[in-house]
Amino acid sequence: MDSLDLSRWQFGITTVYHFIFVPITIGLSALVAGLQTAWVRTGKEHYLRATKFWGKLFLINFAIGVVTGIVQEFQFGMNWSNYSRFVGDIFGAPLAIEGLLAFFLESTFLGLWIFGWDKLPKRLHLATIWLASLGTMLSAYFILAANSWMQHPVGWTMGDGRAELTSIGAVLTNSTTLVTVPHTLTACFLTAGALLLAVSAWHLRRGHQEEVFRPSLRLGAWVVLIAGLGVLITGDLQARVMTEQQPMKMAAAEALYENTESASFSVFTIGSLDGRQEVWSVRIPSLLSFMATGTPAGEVEGINDLQDQYQQAYGEGDYTPIVPVTYWSFRLMIGFGGLAMLVALAALWFNRGERRARSRWLWIAGIGTVAMPLLANSFGWIFTEMGRQPWTVFGLFKTADSGSPSVSTSEAATGLIVLTVLYGVLAVIEVGLFLKYARAGAPEIPADTGEPAEDRPLAFAY
Image (tube, rainbow, N blue to C red; front, side, top):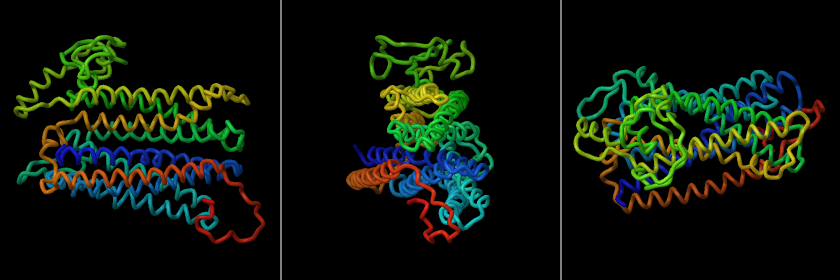
């Protein structure tokens, strides 16, 4: 592998790793805010205990997420300098807004939430976590706006060999952004709901603190189901926009080589890796046409025809992404998300009313739910980015031209190895802290004796 391939591996590993924490942070911040709202409105102690328990896990996740996210921006300058020169005028604008506005908002009010227990009035303190949650969503919006420009460039002009911004409004209201943001946010809530369900299932299986974890399990399961429906609806909208803007990505998602009307969707296929030769498959009639065009009889363009079109538009070259990657990542994304919804539905059914699930395997499935949305998110991003290849900016700038010429193969390999090992160490720390505080359960709330609270800003975390 040359330095470009190594840089791509490095960026892929660090990005997928970082995005493990992002959806948990976004979804869990809002759920913690909701639990604290329930406590402020009702005064019920189990809501306060749940707020502090899930708040601890949220803070651990947030801290690791910030650390791993910083590396992303440095890579643009170190490994992707040609790309940075070409898109810096445009790509930098939403990222700058994210840092100055959204991250400032979430970090400032999160600090007030951490240090404000027993110091700020209840409702004012509650407002801080809601504002921090809003900040996480705004961060996602601006970062997704930058990524959406790579998928569908708008609001720009070519000047002196580089893309120059002409309308920040067009970038922020990009049609790709408008479907990607709700799809990503609903996926974040699905992920956070699965975390609540999994940790609650672990405690309930052992008979721990049912007054806290039984409501948490139900909340998590309902969030998974509702957010899962949101993911399906927004994903359907996103598929049609994607087909309009990047038809090759949709064709590669199905390994569809010829233009086809009423195109079926293969749930599972046995054949050659590139999908050219099919031995056996399970198919849903007309589903691909419906996903791509909104009508069951619609025509979906195939890879061969699109390859010819792209060569005429952009010159000689191979414009087909790696089909096995796009085909299977698309199905694994859908499959793991759907599986999480099925487990959530089972959890609600078998724990309805005063009932308690008896099956050991159901509890194991509930605990394992935490991994399902994380895998779905990872495969979704792999599909999104790999399906755009060979472009970094679709139709404008190729990946082959985007690297840093001054970075040698040995330097790129060193960076890849160091960051992979470092992130592995952080994973051990993260999992260790997460398991430690997750197993500890919800804290007991000391009786109000009228004495001043102990002056430890992070006392609620113990």
